[in-house]
Length: 284
Image (cartoon, rainbow, N blue to C red; front, side, top):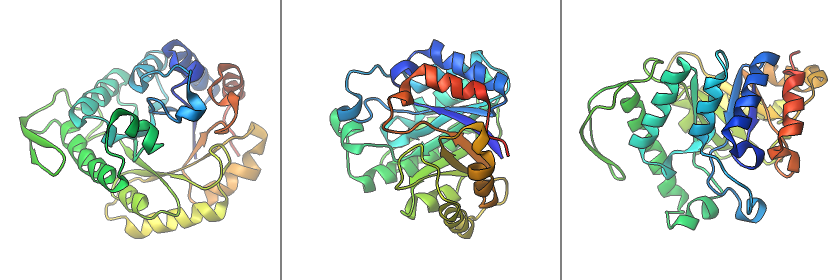
């Protein structure tokens, strides 16, 4: 089991210096990764008036403040970004960090706020198609190959984006989705990891039975060999490792992602998050 810290890209964490401070504390306390959200407004009802930071700028600050931990987004809505621009941002961070990027991808939401507010498509079927096509393009861009592509959503003519990522053939790609929706988990099975969300509030750990259902379903649909990560997340104290994290590891989780409660003001406040980070990961 490996351990990561998860912070939003709004509130106190809109400031790259704050994210760098948390990243440095996480590395010193023995965590294995830092992941940030990728939103522009999130929920306008809940987050109106809060500052938001660009996740790739936040992660750049984190990379400059650390040397070991993995860095990435959980998750980036690929359909909200141009694949060529996103490919350059991720590759630049991978070069800067010495190959420490993990790329989390998903549909993104809330759809009406994050997409509809800017006149973009809000049909989940369309967004899912753009996500799949975009992921395919990202993998080709990151490999440094010459790309020609004529798809339903993106067209590319004779393009080679360099430098390629440090990690070969590309950074690990984790795909997020809400269980028990099956489609995101079939998508995840084609890549390198899965980040399941459940009906319970963000920050509430899943049950071991829920985790077993996810791992079994993804295993059924895996077509490639190689490492595959399963991310479980929630809010803990170091003392809860045996009660919470241990059973989830037995159920197939390979990462524990420490997350604040969705509805708590502590979610985007530096003080409580930093205290939890400095206490260290919940290792059994």
